[in-house]
Image 1 (cartoon, rainbow, N blue to C red):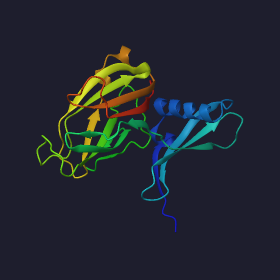
Image 2 (image 1 turned 90 degrees about the vertical axis):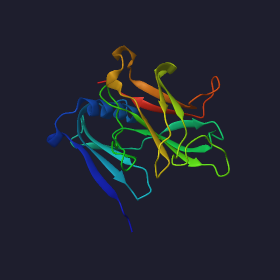
Image 3 (image 1 turned 180 degrees about the horizontal axis):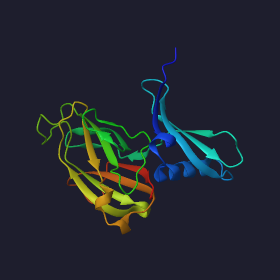
Image 4 (image 1 turned 60 degrees about the vertical axis):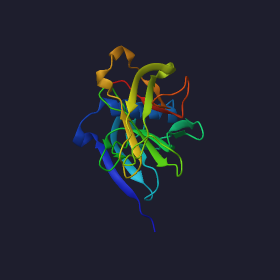
Length: 218
């Protein structure tokens, strides 16, 4: 039995024209077919083929010389690397994800498209587990260690540094968000951005995890 979840995220005839989403759709089309000429984005839908499957996104768009719209099925690919064993002050880093529109109560991302522009707040979510028998300076009511984030623009240009205190989360998560609209606009450029995760007081050049995510400029 199939159990597919299908949710409409954007519809041009209801939500109006969106320059950021149209730019994203045109970029995706060029990756799929460099010869195709993008005309308009009709809608964006999110789909999950089963409960534990990752979100996939369907872009429905109009292109020149076709009487019917085409659809592109897209799945985000997070590129990250971990420096084993990734243990900080008695906690082990289990996973790292990036997205937008974070729901802090549910600790999940609501922004299926995960599009980041100048008004966005790209967010990184870490998930930790306590290492049994290992000493820690973190209070027993907390579920994560002190951490430092290094945000980098394309070409590894340093943009911002953030420090996170230990959280109290039933899922063992921590969040770091970068408010792009508070940064100097000259520092913002489209392309592949990265985040380096370090202990709050690391040795020189020490890192436990790095993550890459994309950003567009509208």
